[in-house]
Length: 166
Image (cartoon, rainbow, N blue to C red; front, side, top):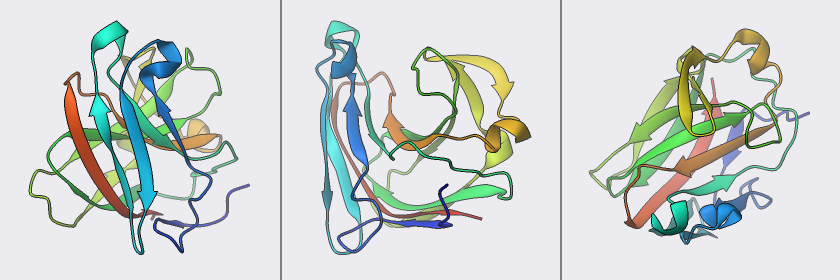
């Protein structure tokens, strides 16, 4: 069971086991990396729409992330303008629903956003279903992630200081 309220990025953080998952898993050509600096991680790369691609993500290991006692996810980040999603996975298989909330900034300065957990929207195979995450699904989150899937080609940069459940 995951027990920390705060996920700190950077060299002294608790995210060394997070992984990159790009659209190459389905034949796409997007590329990304995550590099830890002293107080943040730089998630960057280039998205490509070729071969039905178009996404890049940075994801936690699978675990038991019981989020039922929290109201929101707080993210401190800096970005150059693309829209990202914070994703909650309740299943290991890609064809089952997952839950996302969009966040963005175009000022390339550190900002903090709070994403209410009750506002996470359900997606199935990339399509919004019209549903939102339920309280029982917050009990059974298996994986967390940051994903870029704005249907645009080109470079991106996202610096993340921390993610906090509040």
